Image: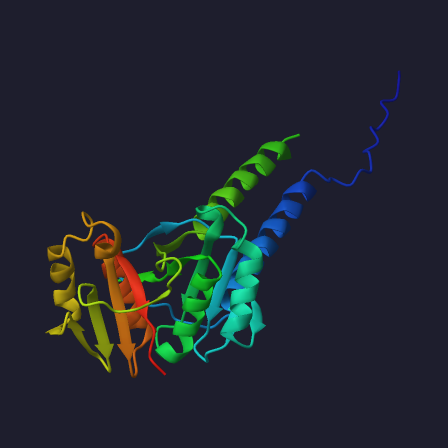
Length: 136
Length: 119
C-alpha cells in the first residue's frame, strides 16, 4: 500500500494584492498633494452668478488675503515682476487659449493691490481668466 | 491575475476624480488691447465706483440694478468702442465689487476697460 505523501504546501508569499496596495498609495499621495498645492495660497475668492467652466491655463497669478502676489505658486514682490513673467510665458503665443492667464485674488483686497496686477497682465499680452465662486 | 481588474478600476476612479477636481469657474476678460488704461471720452459708457457707491454714466445705480441697465445698453450688438464699459474705481473698492461688476459687463456682452487714475 502506498503511503500517500503529504502534499507540501509551497512557501510562497502571496503578492497578488501588492499591486492594489501600490496603486492605492499612489492615488492617495497624488490626491493629497493636489489639495496641498491649492491650500498653499490662502484666499477667499469673490462670488458672482455669471461664471462658466474654464480650462487650465499656462500660467496662474494669485493674490492672497495679505496682498502677497504669487505667479505659479512663487511669490513675487511687485506687479512689474508679474508683467515680465507673464510676458515670457504668453507674450509670443498666438491669440487664444495659449494667452489665457488665470487670476485669483481674495475678495477683500483693495484696488490698490489688484489693479496694478491686472493691468500688468494685460500689458504683457495676457487674457485674464478671472476665477471666482458661484453665488448661491 | 485577479488583481488586474482591480487595478483597472482603480485607475478609472483615479482619472474620474482628478478630472472633476480640476474644474475652475470664472470668465474671460480681455482689457482693450494697446490702451489697457483707457482715456475717457464723452460717449464711452463709464461706471464709476467709489467707496461702495456706483454711478453709470453719472446716474447712481446699485449692484442689483446694474444687470438691467447693462442689458438696456445692447452691448452684445454694439461694435468697436461702443462695446466698452470703462470702470473708474476711486478710493476704496474691493475685489469682490470689481469682480462682480466685470462679470456683469462680460455677461451683458460688453468689454470691460480700466480708467487710469490721473496722478
